[in-house]
Image (cartoon, rainbow, N blue to C red):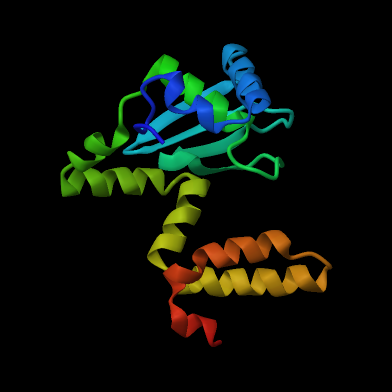
Length: 170
């Protein structure tokens, strides 16, 4: 893989199936990429697909990443669209701005962001991983009783390293 984030199409195009790349380019040209962010060597964004809510996409070095779309493989057309949009927009890297914040500014920013439900949930998981893991176990048990549980199990596995091994034994 070439430099990341990419500097030109040739840095990522050879690693995509031709059809997926073409569809991603079409999505980018149609303006379906709603947001593009750069945080260090990762690109994050939202791409409008066939569902009402845009898909969330993350792409990092080696084209490792994720997308909330139902396509079973990665990278998908939404990842390709995000890469094309990045080349067009070249958003500023957020990491240096965050690193430049004083402790007081960082605390103020976190407190303001904690008012957003989505951010508050993430902060809760980061600050109290054991509680988040235990809640995940409760949701998983409930989902299995109701005949599901696959998505809950995936989410729980993502939290496992943060929660620590002592929680696994419960």
